[in-house]
Image (cartoon, rainbow, N blue to C red):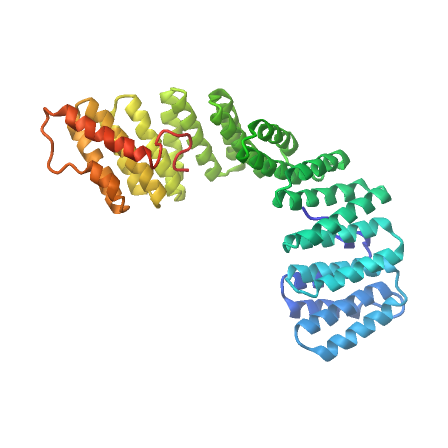
Length: 450
């Protein structure tokens, strides 16, 4: 979460200075020099010490990056001379912009500029500006992976913001601090800072960023086995996301649906899935729509509602194939094979299972396809349908040979076709192969192959 530009505190800054800083951030150093040249052409040497100092220092930095040391030195000296008449708060703001531009370019000199900006802010006596500079520096330090520096600066920013009575600065510092703490595995500290940030975020500017943090806290809680806390965080994230950030809302709905499936609450899972599908369709996001349809189809399959499962899964596969999402289409095809088995349509189940093989692009997909083929073969074998059971069985064996899973391929190896009157032997061999495959992948688990 980015703090607002410190330059926004000073709307009298000419556009050319902003253009120069943007060019530096993008690495367009020559363009930056041109922008600062234009700025200096329009600034009076006597009447604009702040702007002239900023433009001169920035142009000196650009010359330094281009290797022109003499021009860089001349510009820096001229900037210092101009700033001898400038307000410290204005100079601090300009210095912060340069430090941010350097941080974006990964330049090691950025810290020197941040330190100068903070010292100038302290000299100005403006506590809110000090808080803003410390917070912005802390955010850049966090992005650079300097966690210790980031924590110190963000805590300083929050404390200064409290002293200045500026809830917005405090809240933004705390959100950034929570992200650093969460990345370091200190979820408890992160939650405390999130709570205070929400209490101080009176305008709701940080709702989306906080919701994203809560989703990550929920993931950590779920991985630690605390599903109740995970669900609480997700519900809070959902309430924060509202209709303003579709991506955050959809991530939250997908996670809540996954939790509901994990506790076998298919009604809740379907409700979250329908909300996700509706959001994706309104947003025109076919990828998310295909994923939501896939999950809704699996939920219906688990709940025994086979007509709904077939409809949702078929639509998902059609969209996935049109978008080139082969892995998702393969997963949907495997699920359709399971639906067909439940309906007793064994030949159709084989067709879907073989379609999944064609669509599979990785080892995990192929292993799942082998298990699905074994399931089709076992069920068809029980029904005495050799014309389905044998190609399904042989297809699974071929996949395991392709994957160099000789242990499983050997179990499935049966040589010449079996006579029709040895159903028990055939079924035993298929069951043994199916059990072996289940040691690799469970074809009936929610969201398999995803």
